[in-house]
Amino acid sequence: MRRLLRSFGSEPRPPAPARSAFDVRLSVGIAAVMLVEAAISPQVGLGSPSPLLGLALAALIHWRRAHPLLVTAIAFGTTGVLEGIGLAIERDVQDLHSMAVVLMLPYALFRWGSGREALLGLPIVLASAALGMASDAVRPAEVIGGFGVLLVPVALGIAARYREAARIRELVDVRTNERLNLARELHDTVAHHVSAIAVRAQAGVVTGANDPAAATDALRVIGDEASRALSEMREMVRVLREDDAAALAPAPRVEDLAELAAGLGGAPEVALSLDGDTERLSPAISGAVYRLAQESVTNARRHARGASRVSVSVSVDDDGVRLRVEDDGEPTGRGAAPRAGFGLTGMAERAALLGGTLTAGPGPERGWTVAATLPHGGLGTAG
Image (tube, rainbow, N blue to C red):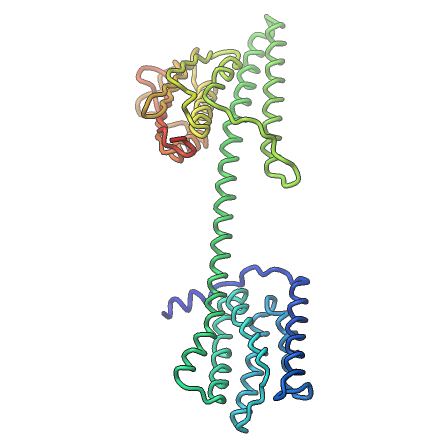
């Protein structure tokens, strides 16, 4: 219990909304109700001090979010003192039933106060309630019921507090996942275009002296790839801006691998093989296969030494889809570690999120091989 109290007491204040016109209308409405009750009640009357106390409490309601402990201490401290005076003189000095509005303050204390403020304010609330029950000489059953009623707003405040905290944590998790997804998409997309630019630039340098037309062709491809990379980066940045609507472009699918392979000029060439009904794949699975193949091809064109060919094979059957990307570059050795960087990590995470697996390592004889398996039952699949 002590550990629980210590943990709650260390909690900071949750973010509270700024005071609004609603708070003003609420305070004015409460004050009006108290004045009406005082005017029509034969036991009170407008000349009684109770209406003045009620008006003061109504004004305090306006500050319940910004200063929950101070407001609660003033309200319950004042009513507690008056209950004590009434107990001493054997006369009820608080006659307005509408003063029950003070029950809003324990809710505010536990909803918007810090843990320390809530623990400091609760004894004041309980002490004031105890004095009130003592002055009214209530029976034990009524004491239990009274404290039960008093603790209801406390429980509601705690529930609302932790519900909001859970919602904030959920939003943080969603934003974190979105940032990771955007980072992965940015890496997969831009790295592909930059790799193509680097390959064509190297080819242009080699052939430029003897074949100016080849150098011109390389510059044209570089310009096209740079334009595509810039366009895709702008689309991703636009998603992050609240004042612009994201373009509703279709997500890449397995069928788009043919266009990807055809658009890659220079060495190594990319050979694509599709086997099975790719149309049965869900958008999530199909898009993941495309991105995994794109990243694998980008890595092969960037890192495979002496490679002349990159083979991309996609096979769909009743169990799922299998992707295999391998190049014929120089042997890397059985004990070679996977290439460093965020690419392989992001690829493995993408496959794991969809219930699949991904392995990468030296090929059986030459080059590098990436193999991924994704089930039909991954996220977003249709039954």
